[in-house]
Image (tube, rainbow, N blue to C red; front, side, top):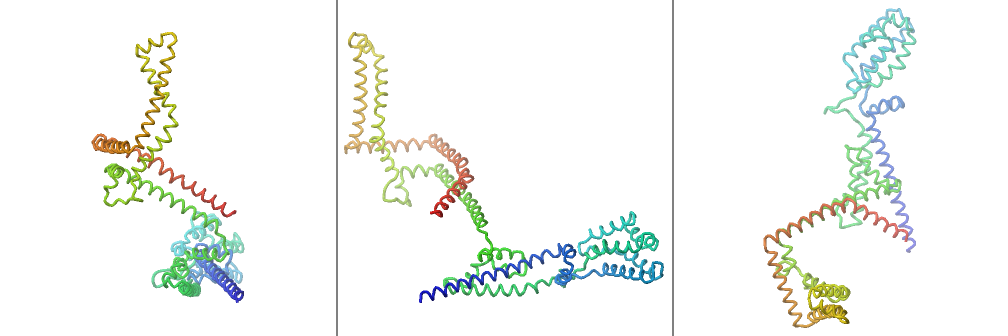
Length: 472
């Protein structure tokens, strides 16, 4: 039974993957059509030169028709060629066609039918080619000369007509007339090609949203549809170029396009940029709040009298400032002072020796034979006894209840005296100014430096950790 369920699940998975790939390829085909359509007008000259059959098929889609004036001009040239072949260059019919071509040339120069298709440069190229061919300075004179019986007879009408058909006719063919609709916009029938794709994608969105809402009852229809919001670009009849977004995502999800490196780089860039802004904003905000607390006196009051804050919340009912102070005192007395006691003894000995050396009695004893060593031994013993006694008395004081009470009273009085002195305007203002300036320097020199360079290092470390985990 379990193997049958696994087989059915495997078939369902393959079916879903096959459907995803089919719709992805269909969306890709639609995107190619959209991009071709968007490029058709700008690149029509290229398509006309390389794939003339394609332009014949696709011109009606975008409402392009041969321009009546330029088409009439080319038809007249074809009639002239046929007439010369039949009756020769000197016949009245040939002269009539030449006269008509001279009039049509002058009208094209004056009215410029290339302007509507934004092909003004094409007309300039045509005029330049004719001027160079006949050696005239002005375009009107050049066309009049080119379509004259004397010039064609002298230069050879076969060569000149062949030149026109080879060099000038393709330029005339680039001009066109584009139909304008009733709302004043160019006619575009691409929607007829695009509509079946839109219908298919709209149905797919509905089916997928229905399936998602069935699998996840906590989602309503709107939420299920918004899960794949980018698919809406596939059904928009405008801004069709935005379909590149859902097509790219679909191809990536179907495994037909590898964008893993791009995805990682985008995530990296976004994370780094976002983290830089967050770190800088938080760091600057914290320091600004500290500066405001210092200037208002709130920080001082919080450090020494936290219990007076009505909304202040104690953790484990412990005054951290007092606990930290007590811990620092214990470490100093029981751990630090024993280690530096020899240095204290040396300092006390040096002080005593300097003090006693100024005494006349001390100097006289040093001068007595056999007793010169006594002052030095005396100062050494006295320094050692003083330092050891002071240290032992300090320890005994802290361990003795009465001494502890005296120490606590000393601490309270010290705090009260400290607070009194801090309340003096000159002391408070000076300390506040120094602390605010120090925090400003920290904000400028360290917070921004972390935001600018530290995030990169953190990201690199995270990548290394991820690589180590992946290898294991």
